[in-house]
Amino acid sequence: MSSITDTSVPVAPRRRMPAASSWTLTIAVAVAVMALLPLGFVLWATAVTGWETAALLIFRGRVGELMVNTILLIFFTVPICIVVAVSLAWLTERSDLPGARLWSWLAVAPLAVPAFVHSYAWIGMWPSLHGLFAGVAISVVAYFPFLYLPLAAAFRLLDPALEDQAASLGLAPFAVFRRVVLPQLRLALCGGMLLIGLHLLAEYGLFAMIRFDTFTTAIIDQFQSTYNGTAAHMLALVLVLCCFVLLGLEAGLRGSRRYARLGPGVARQLKIIRLGKWKYPCLLLPLTVAAFSLGIPALTIGRWLIAGGSSIWRMDEVGLSLIQTLAICLIGGLATTAAAVPIAWLSVRRPTRATRFLEGCYYLASSMPGVVVALALVTVTVRVMLPLYQTVATIVLAYVVMFLPRALVSLRASIAQVPVELEQAAASLGRSPGNALWSTTVRLAAPGAAAGVALASLGIINELTATQMLAPNGTRTLAMAFFALTGEIDYAGAAPYALLMVIFSMPLIWLLHYQSKKIAGR
Image (cartoon, rainbow, N blue to C red; front, side, top):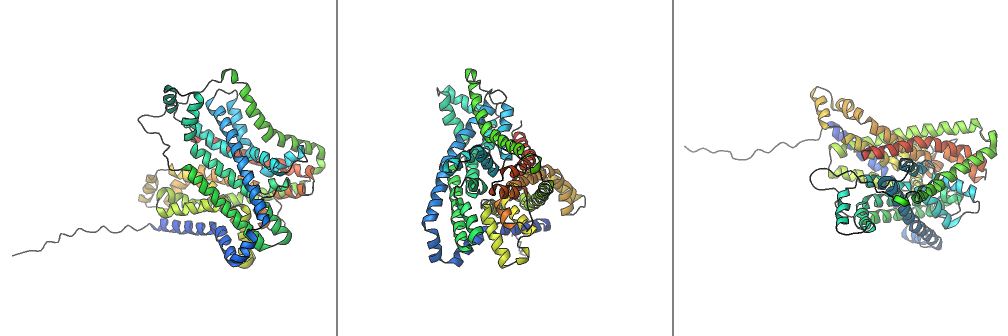
């Protein structure tokens, strides 16, 4: 008798994505589609305009002038910021500079002063200041902390063994720095340079006050004075292309090298370099930077507060602006952080190509300048959803699109520190997936969520262009009130608003600086 034996290998049942994960992915996709709305708007506006009309509006003398201004602004500002930030970071993190901790904090503090307040302060000191030179000088003091923060963190994490090996081969100290230290700072340099470049493209208030034309100022002027939507849309297209060029340059400069340390054990503690006779002369750099980035705003605001007296503190107007600013910051910060939760959880718990693609969409959308985001939402709400035009929902949506990565970075880091086994243990005790997630990961990641709310709120406090174009009628935030009064040359009346913006930004900057130190184990 013969028998037939089934030798086929049983196929494992295909694992289905849990219901909670599928719902989370659905929400993450919806947020990504919403975040890409400005890019879709620019492409749609170009298609509707037609190539002939678009070419006439793009290839004209005015656009060439704006492009030259933009290139020169970035060409001069970014290298100066690199020199200032690298020098400060090395002095405060690697040398025995007197008061290094204080200077480290003072190097981050200028972020609490909005860029247009820097411009207001410098004009208060030198009323005739305008043009490219003014734009470069003010941009350096306003934006160099974006480079200083990642560079300082990178200096703290360097392995001193590499420098010792290079020195043992006979390299001079400067050669060691150039050939060993600088290559390890590439990621921090590229990230900071990209942030500064994107801010230079998006900034409006700083350049409008010193009468220096950029694409953003031209778009706002076109939109507010003549409401020439087609011309503004084509300028927005050029501005978006400039953003993509910066993103491509940053990716090319960053490369794909490995920067992690390989080998047994852990890296030795950094060796503090003795400055010797140069200790006190080196103090001139942080002193000068602090004087220009913090001293000038403090002197100007203080002078106008004294000159205006108590009459400029019109508490009904100032109080209303303060309440509206705090309310919109809280709502926008919470909404932005909530929108970042699904993709932050997926990127840590379900890392796939799809989640990485969605995360890239979020970062790509955040590179869009605020004026482009505002133009997109104005067009969509007027043409499709008119009841939403100039409502709180629209302005909050703009904040979510613009500041989503700030909350995403903090949330992702916090969720990664929570063991997934805690969620599994809670589920094994009979809790639903949502309840298990809430009772473990969400609660333990709350500090990261709080940091995300704070960082998003900091951006909202300083945001001007999207708020001006999208805020409901009657809205008067601190930034809007400040810019309106400076536009009327009422510098004394604008001083209380500038002071309040700085005061309420300081705790958020402290949190940012504290988190940077904490990550590096300081």
